Image 1 (cartoon, rainbow, N blue to C red):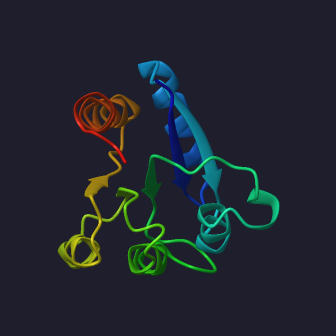
Image 2: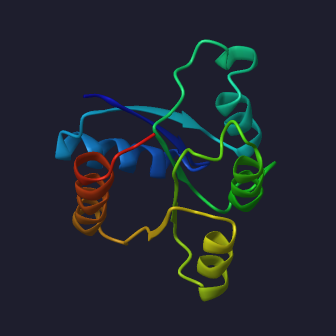
Length: 139
């Protein structure tokens, strides 16, 4: 099975890193990307240029982005009856306890901190794939 994953990340280098890590893992995914929360909400609502996209099985969400940050996206998605069932996993550089607590208070499905090294990043995404793509049942 191919999984549809939406990566919401504003840094092109981090987008490239995620793509490279998933490629190394040979993860069975189609990875779509949005560079900010405004585009992400259009994507999730399949509006405008995103009218023909496939609804993602899950979302990887950065917290700190321009126009609409990850906290606002998480709050909006989880308040929307049509979208709230999509698992959202935070993927960010912040390990601040306040960010972690707020993400879970806003009903994030998980919280991952981006490691500094590529090998460690691959290990984190391998654990992500092990749970979300091989063990969990996605909506």
